[in-house]
Length: 150
Image (tube, rainbow, N blue to C red; front, side):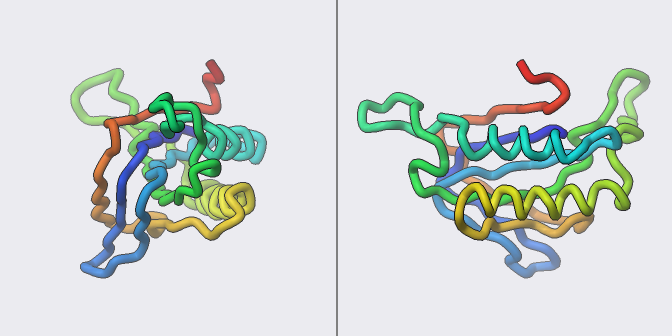
């Protein structure tokens, strides 16, 4: 499971001209699910997202988590995070999980993050053509992969 985590001043998702998710200060999380992902990957990644210390403390040091600053999370599914560009110029998405695997894990991630944050999180819609807007704060963008726990 891969996540691109962006610290934002605000972020939103629009589908067919309709606003479906919107947050102020917090994290925009683009989530890619691959076939081999499990509930263990989900729990590990959710814990990382909620507890990653990338918000400034009183001294301006990135020392606080999204939970500690009472921020919000906008979760957006993004299968293209598992693109393989090894051969040719057309990415292959063979590692991205099919709907039967990805949708239940995506929905579980929503529940897991909401539970850890103690608030409902905002989302896009799995598989939809979404327009994502954000104001990246910093900019701070971090990529986390549950298969490479560095």
